Length: 266
Image (cartoon, rainbow, N blue to C red; front, top):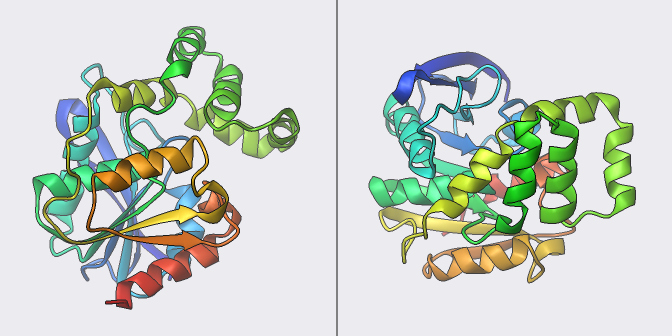
């Protein structure tokens, strides 16, 4: 599926979000919500692999080019309200997919409004990465985005030195991460600011949760996934073989095909 249009949607507080639409712009389909250190561009290969719906709309959350700023009143509820604006624009959305922080946003949105189908890949919830907040705040105050990537990679994701150095060796990729890391402290603080509700996706007809095989039962993503799973007791759980948290970059076609499969099961 090829990208057809990009739309800019005004949201609260003088900010805005853009969305990249693939396929038929006027046909209700799948809406995708990326997480932290990610943007709509990073999900283009997954969107291209999805063909179970006539359209795929990928949200470029605020804080990313070419969306607007987070603003001083930013919170997790801000993200849920922004997503509500997108869903209002694309009425009749048939499925909502979220990854990581975006997965939590999608599940919370399904508490506020009825949705037919919600899919979340390794959604995270409080407490997640809160131990890294002081260091992330210090890095943000000095605009040290290299340090921000290091903190997220090492202290939160648990990557070793060799893995981080391999990321740094890719100059173009590292430069993109530097830009994407700017909202990292605010987003992690928002994630940890309020306890999640006892139940998530209350108003969804159907919920599917996905975890990468490499993270199943392992901290930090697998253990946070288990915390979310307890709050969505009726969800079906699926394992993506051979993958971890970054499946959208490392195996986008496989992830896209799994999403297609979930459109037809049951």
